[in-house]
Length: 527
Image (cartoon, rainbow, N blue to C red; front, top):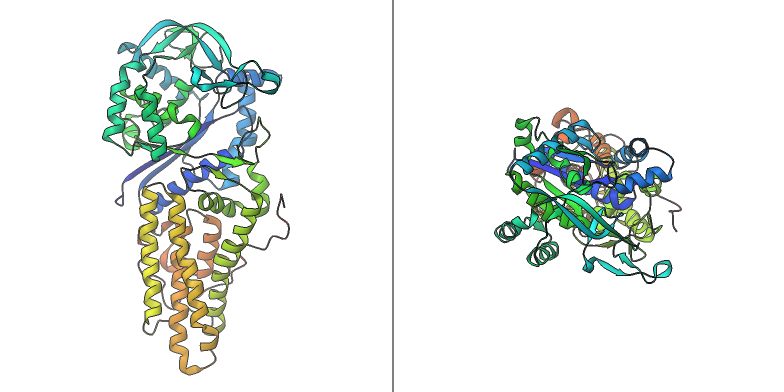
């Protein structure tokens, strides 16, 4: 992507029936890393997240807690969902709530547009409905119940019985768009990624599409259908619209043209909504389809998908209170291939924290700056001529920056971090082999000592820039300790695609003290 391009990335809007767990946090961090990278590349970047607050599940949850749906949503947003963004250091540009007037007004405009175009009609529907998914289920989506639900058909995702509903609803002619969707997937193979997600979606659409029931009349917690206030809009139909109602559709066309289309990050369980229903809706309205729908994997605990209902949910603060937000961000982006399922364990988190962050990156930073202070009074020395070993480090830094940017373009965040981490590993090995502490014992080696420490310090400069989208707090402290802000500007002002160009650290820059970036943790949770 060229500098100055547009990059609009979204998370799903999360359902406020309960508090967030690390599965939600995983998506938020991934979107934030991508957004921070693109901002530092000079791209016109926008990160949208938010909450989904309508539907039968919210109504029932509120009733169980002796409150109204709006009061319940307000409470959860203020006490759980907005604080999550601070806990994880998320740099979102907007936070959309589906109970906001801007969403309601534009949703009703969109529905009216589709009705006027002939894509909405009235009909009757009977089928198995999962309140947890807020979705009518096909027979293939149901499994035999176990335990208390033996003899019943249950939702394959929630393991709870479905309800047989018969309603008079309004329908969206989604079946009209089957061929257009197939053409989209075939002509733009990157529209749905990764490949396994694309294959799943293609197979689903080729089996044939039914028209979609888009209203409910059995309860009233939702946005009213504009021409019939006895119906509310189906929660998924209006929830998907958040991506355009938050960015100007129906109200600020200049903003909408600037932001849309978006890259959507979604969990695999909501892939079909985003890769089938959503583009069909946009086609019907004559609007551009999303740039991409990327279905990341699930976080597994004990082999099961993260779930509050199954008591496998882990609150993000259980991790960040001990390890900090940077370690949380690094671990989940590095340890799990983005697009694949990944298992979380406290043991793996603790091991990676100690080996990769504390002993790897943290120790590299502290000992490099300590040696610059000890041997050169804190002033970054001038390199006196580069040996093959020095040039090899320069090549590693350049390649890492290029490879990381290419990986980010593919949304392969784990590959980007892996590429950058080669700098950490090579620099640690370089310092061990060059032995600056031995060079310092002989004045005749002073020029060589200066080259070695400049190489190490300049490598740290590149690392601070390249890792700042992943670990903004630690990299910010490192940037301050490098003492370069007065000469190079703030860390976030550094152009990330130019980070691999050698020689940006000014000679003579006075470094400062650096407290441990990743302090030792004596007893980790879950240990």
